[in-house]
Amino acid sequence: MKSEYYYHGSDIEKIKAKYNISEDDLINFAANVNPFGLSPNLKKEFDIDIITSYPNRQYTELKTAIAEYTNSSVENVLVGNGTSELISTFIRHIHPSKAMIIGPTYSEYEREVSLSGGQSYYFPLYEEDGFKINADTLIDRLDKSIDMLIICNPNNPTSSCIDCITMRRILDVCKENHIYVMIDETYIEFVAEINAYSAVSLTDFYNNLIILRSTSKFFASPGLRLGYAIIGNEDFIAEINKTSKPWMVNSFAAKAGEIMLRDSDYIEKTNKLINEEREYCYNALLAADGFKPYKPYANFMLVKINKANLTSNDVFEKAIKQGMLIRNCSTFPFLTDEYFRFCFMEHDANVKLIDCITNC
Ligand SMILES: Cc1ncc(COP(=O)(O)O)c(C=O)c1O
Image 1: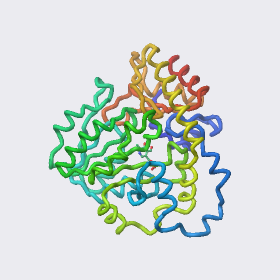
Image 2: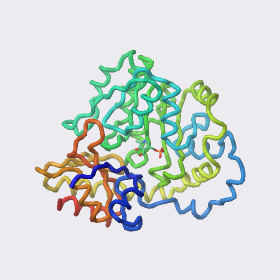
Image 3: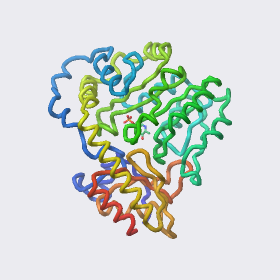
Image 4: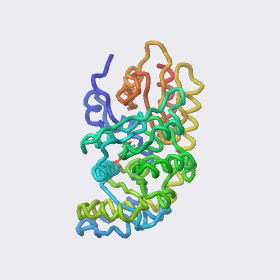
């Protein structure tokens, strides 16, 4: 049976209605959100009366917590209503007539470039390369006709990741050619060796670099709408601040961000779980007949089906009937109905999903 609609991890209301499942019976493997839920410190320490005051316009306390968490400087931090708003803010500000996007990837970049009147060109990641970037070919294609390069790192949905050494080579060529580079690091905190992959420390050397981060996925708080950017170029930050609204983030999100980013037990527990479950899920599907998992760096994995007459929609239907929501990836550019993606949840849930997939 074919689903006439491809569900996103946040389409819970539609899914509950169509498949007659209650929210409590649904395990969401499609939203890429930390399975531990909210930081316990947030529940303990949060005082709801915070919303009786306007937030501090400078967001000094929140920016201090972000700077400590990311090992950057308070002056280099900007905050926003989720990464989504920051993607839009930067694209509209840079206003690229020609943007290059490394894909398949998250669709919002292309949408925002188009809304700001520009054209997007995809630099493809190839299945034969395990969706790893070919940096030499990319570097050959970068020239002065491009205004902006957009990279999701680790990339959604391939879960591939570019290391800092390779990123520096790309950034050098972009700097020479006056190309702004926006790196969306929404999933970077799930990577095992974050310091070898995050480009935050490179903001001190490249004035054309914008890093975006979010609390939505790692801190399981997509409803909070808290994102932030790290930029080394003070003039660029001043320009953005001139046109931004007085309160980019509400008092609730500002205080919650401070508490969550300092919850080191939660961070450590999450890293341990994701490292173990990533290995478990990857090895289980590597060993299974008919499925090809691509080496995951983030908290989710892309899988190709290598079985005749089995599509990603079939796997989706089988999983949802057992209360598990995965992401059919056939709507991503360059991907077909042979691909699906799922994120790592707690161990028992992962065992149940792997069992369902391998019995398809
Ligand atoms: C790569 C990527 N960037 C950004 C977002 C949106 O993040 P936020 O909730 O911070 O707006 C998502 C959401 O799925 C995503 O996958």
